[in-house]
Image (cartoon, rainbow, N blue to C red; front, side, top):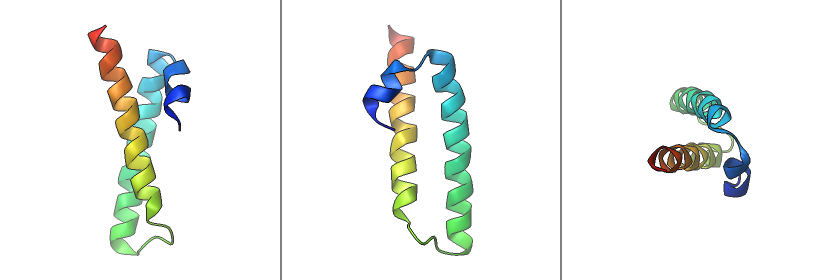
Length: 63
């Protein structure tokens, strides 16, 4: 998910997306610990997306 797409979402949508992606990241991380994923770059991409959303949420709270 690109930064421009994140900025277009409302705060409620961002919060829902954040919870959903954070859960997906945790599940993927656990699955990777048991049996390696075919594409471990999924973890990196998902982690960065979660961080982007968290940053946008923080920026909106400050304003």
